[in-house]
Length: 286
Image (tube, rainbow, N blue to C red; front, side, top):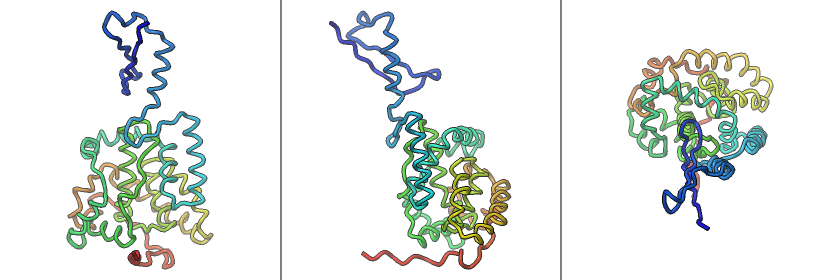
């Protein structure tokens, strides 16, 4: 009996997976390849990784990850991996709209083509930017908080390689938005910025964060968020340039205030004293 080998190409053609039977020669390939084997191979191919960090899941598995990650993120919002998992498993249906919006914008289209990444090398580059520049402000923001750009969790649960880059880009430019909109990184500041992100991107995770995590605030701070900062988020998010279509790496030398004016950025209202940034963290002792 001749053995028949299958080669499955992990790409779509005409919206479907293609399965190709390969034998020793053309005469060994049957004219009617068994549909049950082809279907099994297609299902296998459906769950093959599409990029290095991809973890393919079926719908039930993805739903379980979304629910459990959301519960964990509410209890421990500092767990970036849980927050990221919620964003990926709940936002995949929104990502094509963000991607298409970027494709229609010349700068956004260029970002998709060149795929810039924000890493610790980016922070080092910004340390040499002129005082008062956007790059210098970003370097100070990251340095004062001892943040590392390389510590962001990789995208794992988005079943499309280009859309995985779109959510990676949103994740990596998040700290640029902190600088531009002058939002602190405590729970209050993050929720205010998440409200703005929801207006800009429509990603469900950002809206869920505002709805759920605001109850970690005391009643007075929660009322402040609802009465003043969420209306600011709606106004600022609606007025500014599409934040996913700004090539931030091309603006590091620009004056921060000039950049805000160019992109119609409205900084957040100054928070009460107890919600303000307390100053740079001390260096970690070896």
